[in-house]
Length: 308
Image 1 (cartoon, rainbow, N blue to C red):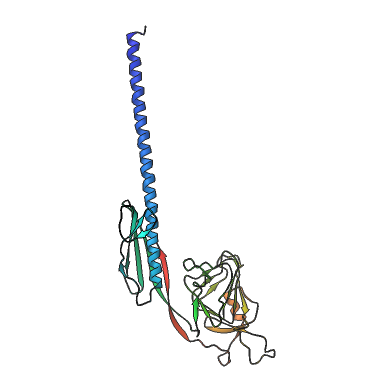
Image 2 (spheres, rainbow, N blue to C red; image 1 turned 30 degrees about the vertical axis):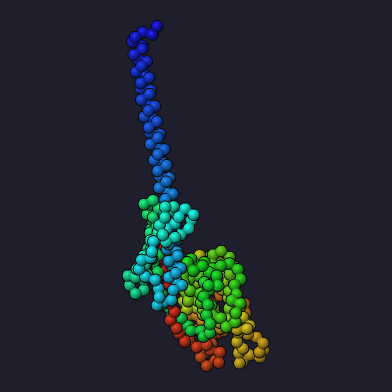
């Protein structure tokens, strides 16, 4: 037989063990519930973020496509996302979340798109700040098309699209605009009658070949921003858009014309530019030359876009 004294001790031990197990069980349950709640919150936060982003991107696209005197402004109707991943403008019982967008103009050159995503009362906000930039560039008569629309580069990052890019049309002036042109992923080759750079070129790592009859730089180039001395411009004369000089003997040879720092130069096929000082070694085109293009100026509007 177990002495009464030992029986009491055993009972106390059993009670203590049960108490500890109860506390541990409650703690584990609380941790599990907390993690589940946290995971659920994180899922809703991510969904709300992407809803807000979707609203901002759709509104920005509509804003870009609108004419300058018909840009959207003010509040947009609430858009709902249902469990079929469909965006609708009427709330229903199978709604996952929603977003609201408001467009404001704090001044004459700035437009702010604020998109608020909401999933289960979890809110995320995406803001797009659009700043209108007026740039004075050398005017080139004839039809124009943007390099962005030709997929020559990404309009958000300025990253050039690797490969050979042509317009497929004659008499086209291609404008390469904001936010500048960056070359970091591979060789790039552009071809058009006229290529008009309205913003900087950041030639980080690979050569940029320009096949044209006329090239215009309205701002500076930087072929060595990464410090590796391997960036370069290669100028090729597009025969169909090149010019013949009055003093040349072989009339079949075509010359390209290039403007840099408000000075016009001739360039021959396979001309390589390593730094902006290399333009000084090119032959200047005097104003009295019949091929001097002139320097008529025009103002163009472009947009600087910042996401936050």
